Amino acid sequence: MSLDAVWFVIIAVFWTGFFVLEGFDFGVGMLHRWVGRTDTERRVAINAIGPFWDGNEVWLIVGGAAIFAAFPDWYATWFSAGYLALMLVIVGLIIRGVSFEWRGKVDSDRWRSTWTWTLTVGSALVPFLLGVALGDLLAGLPIDSSREFTGTFVDLLTPYGLVFGLTLLVLCVAHGATFLSLKTTGVVRDRSRSVAGRLAAPALLLVVVVAVWTVTLSAGGPWRIAAAAVPVVAAVASLAWRRSASEGRAFAATAVTIGGVVAALFANLYPTVMVSSTSPANSLTVSAVASGSYALQVMSVVALVVFPVVLLYQAWSYWVFRRRVSGPTAPSPASVR
Image (tube, rainbow, N blue to C red; front, top):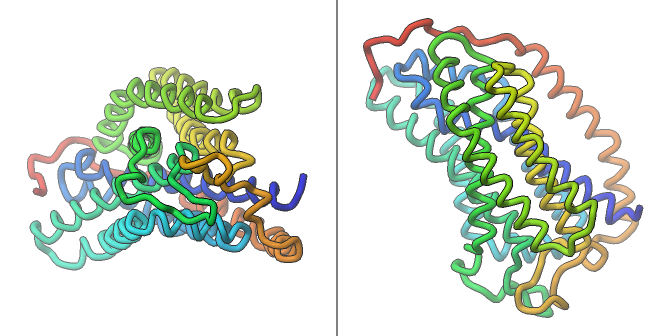
């Protein structure tokens, strides 16, 4: 396998890892207002992801940086085409991070309610917009022979991209609900299990639709079909394990589901990195937009040194904070608006 193909796989791993790890963070951020009806209950939900959320965002940063270094023309075309959408992603990440830090700074119901809503909105905005952006890579955007995006903002709203973004949004909520049912106790856990159960069937339907659509848009082939089938099988397993109250297995299955959806997109995209809807000849391919071999060699050495350290640190942090976060065992009559 050539180095440019290796780096395409590495980038796919980064984006897949981001949605697997940050996906449940997004889900908790969207759900905490509803699974927690008092400030104490909402703190339980937030504390469950407290040690992880900022570290998980490293995968997004590294994934974007890897595209910039390994495939600069892909980075230039994709990021310039989605400039406005990516700015909204950054805004979503900022208000989400600020919400974690500021919601407890003032002892006021109105203050906490404001930052509760910003956390909810930011957590929903980011996975949906990133999902649309990823879906557009395969759906196709107007790109000319100079690798310039020639469309408008409306052209970014492709039907496949919108469905792909919606699928990731729903899967993040389901992933977050399953995580809370695994990591919390009391009423927060009970409500999270209820949400996860209600979302199981819609999530499975969306995964099936995206899997079929993904293969339809690609060149096909047995291994591409197999890649698209993985999240479907995982979604079915998640549904079965959730009904049997096997929370650990259900969480693993939702992780494979959301990761499988992203990985299947990259598998069906290769050897293209960005499809042109103007002309197939204008599509960006791995070999055409890759950096020089020396640059890829240096990057590979750095990745071999740094990547295992990041994995070990994250594995250690998850092990240290593996216990459940205790919460109220019965609903409180008071509620925070």
